Image: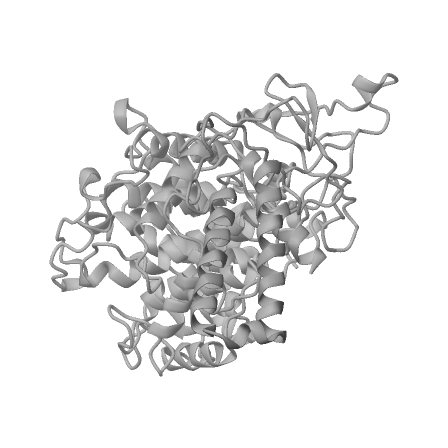
Length: 608
């Protein structure tokens, strides 16, 4: 009884008069109740006595409610100008110290220094590149391992969650409107460079190199061995196939795969054009750049598909930035990428669909491209704000698959190979981000790929089952074989590569869709066929880039599918072709640095 009274009275606060009144009242009420129960006094007119005791108890309850501010939110004389102390108690190693408003250190509780509560800006500009903490360098030959434990006082590092439909969803709207430094787990401390200096300041100041082709891009400290690239938000190692685009020595490695200073300058010009033509809400407006013009490509009327494909065009532009090793958390164009991702998230449907307002012929293309962009951004950064939108997008892709394994214009339509490539790539990127794709989905994909193949070794491919094989579809199927890791025997691969190599890129017959998949597929093969293709692709593509006025860095949409996609479509695809040298590592390549990689454009392939 004594413990209960003290607990109740303790909730009232420092008003001791009210405490004593309630204590006395509770004591009197308890004594009267005991007398009523155990003496003959309670036998005479018990109802009247019970009513009286009930009234007395309700008066005590009223006083208690008043004292604990249940009826009155503020005691008399108090205003709304009081100070609220906030402390994050879930951070390991967190002490009772915090920074006061003037930067001085304070102590909780009872400290005189008060910390105001402020809401973050809706869209603060990302911090300058030189102030972003560098990811701890790891020796090149160190195995891929979990991220190191955080230092004392740092926020805990959480691994990406598996794809679980029951996971609590994060509201997609405006969820990227915090700067990178406001993310938990995003503060990886800089490590001092060995031998960088004798005093403490010099020893903790990393030295950076500027990329001669992109002065704004700073590399990792040169006095350390090349580090395994790690995700900016959680410190986990980036998936092996995506690592090359994020390496500090990216261009030097890419030159061994066929990149040149001219290709890299072309990429930088293309990205700057995309930056200059992004809309204020984060999208690239398809119709504003010539999309939606009916050209009856291959003899079919598609009703001007692409005019409202802002989602897909925005996703394609984002892929060009992501392929260059830039994300919404790091890189010269991180703010552009952040705005683009925000547009995708704000327009994602509840079921995960990312097609937006696109027309019938463009809807699933838009969803596949946007899903690929979201999954790549998540795989490269580990930003948990992207996990739930990417998971829902992947789930929509899986649910839209036809029982025969493909995708087409609407969910559950019998598939075509053109749609298949984008959906497969989005699921592959989701796997690289740590999400799980069901085995049944993979089995169906293999089944569909097998259904559209032809040729002696099944290396050729057609748009739909039973139709005539074509080189664009064979190129797309070749890329799919590598990323699906199925239906890719040496004879099959060789048959496909031989067929594709019979029609190399030419400046008078531009088909960027064909060139994009041909580049992806033959780069993975990486032999004499790749060298011939790369030489032809550079010779045909680089002179086509515009160098005048407002079109500087872009490619005209005067090619097979350019009328539907417009200038942003053409520029993004051309850019992706020229980023193939570091976008994905070859699946079956020899280690970088062997003699096999010394072949350069313009020279005959070295015999194997």
